[in-house]
Image 1 (cartoon, rainbow, N blue to C red):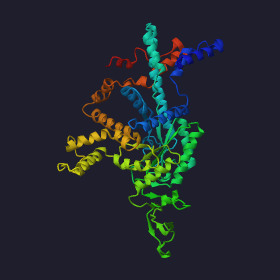
Image 2 (image 1 turned 180 degrees about the vertical axis):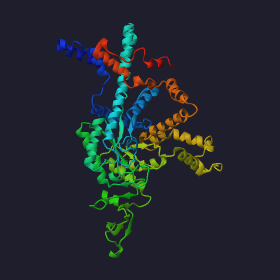
Image 3 (image 1 turned 90 degrees about the horizontal axis):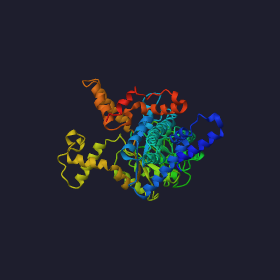
Image 4 (image 1 turned 30 degrees about the vertical axis):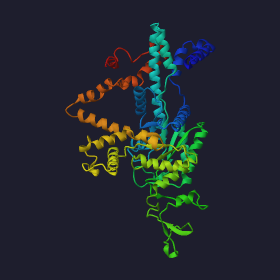
Length: 535
């Protein structure tokens, strides 16, 4: 028996038990409302999506072509539209997630106005966005299932049992729009206790996966900007523990932690950890410090710190701001150590923030990690901070040059130029961009590919195009031709924006609650009816 029929029978029993006081309650309507609201709490969602993500991780371990993807979101409607589009075009949400970007929260959600990615925004806005995203995804479920019930009523009224059975099967086997969210907690917004408290709020809102980075919390920078400062492993591991305890306390035992290292682009540290034995984790971290030898007291200035390394005294180079400098060209080694240490101490997935999208560079680090942790997997930022066109054209230029191919017609420093757009080099570069995610999943251990800020850029581009035409010679045609007609032709449900915002759902509920006296919005004078024959 389907869950819908189980719920129907259960409400019928309740109605009988409560006697005449419940005469106005329709078991059918109550069962429909339950079917349209599968998830009652954020923890229900976190447990459900954690199981999905764990299964997907196992699928990837068995077959690297089964990688996962997501797009960044800064508003519930944006996330809803992404999942609606995925179901419409691909038929399933399988292996497709959403990403919650701290960058976009800072830039678009803060009460202070647009902020850089430096953890200056209100940390409560992060769990609030998670809750908002899932509210919109649940509404998408309710709207679609509500439409199926209308079709079911029509089939029953027409005595079309075959169609009615088919629609009932669609209701019983309905695939939800609710998918995992990889949620950015930045560097934890404070110490390990602050990290734990915020992680709890995020999990209670529905997060099954939390991404945390190894930068200093109060000096955090965007991963693709300068001035990044990392923390010793012991500090970072304490925050990983804090997130795990938050998951366990709330009963999400299979919650996923992504440990992000910014060491590749971070040349500074704020703190020198205490080493207790030669070769311990603190000693390994300190071995990367840029130092000068200390031969006598005369080599020391007031306030200098002295370390003993390999039987010799050295002093770490300290900058005027008090930060300590790492040796040049040690970023990849530090990334590898960060990743191994994180996986050995509670993290499930890795994130290596790189300065360019290069499969061989990422794969080289992953190969070193996998010598210790064979099933190490990455979440990778397919970042809009990269100039993808220029990077890949230069990669193809270099590959052709190394192979002895004639590249004299190209200027490597000007490969972004419009004149090259139709060239053979540009076409090959575009093909490598197209296959980048599959190639990196296969060759560099990337389980999850995401774009952090896609809708920040799509909103800017589409708004620019509309404003250019609307306030110019096109006038209203800029909107009609550039937006509404495309919505109609491409079958976007949001062309009926009243229904998308919940008007039809509200009408159904009014009928449930008030019967024939319900005042509905979807009558013959509703202008949304103009779109019923729009195609």
